[in-house]
Image (cartoon, rainbow, N blue to C red; front, side, top):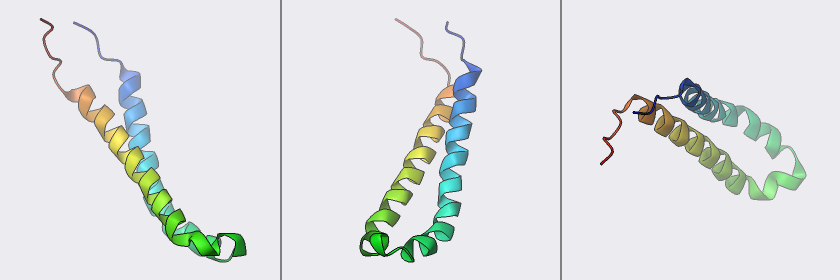
Length: 76
């Protein structure tokens, strides 16, 4: 039986926290990006990308945390 590595749990928690941080940071950053003329035409795409990054971080971190606490399957 393989021992579970605590580093995977810590990494999963850090990914979760980073994803949550992205969701809280987006409303603060978007008004600053609106002021920059170069980014003004693609704000919808930029906002979508930020939310996608946040969702992927939360999903990846959640997957690692859940996998850490699940019972290992018996090898046949």
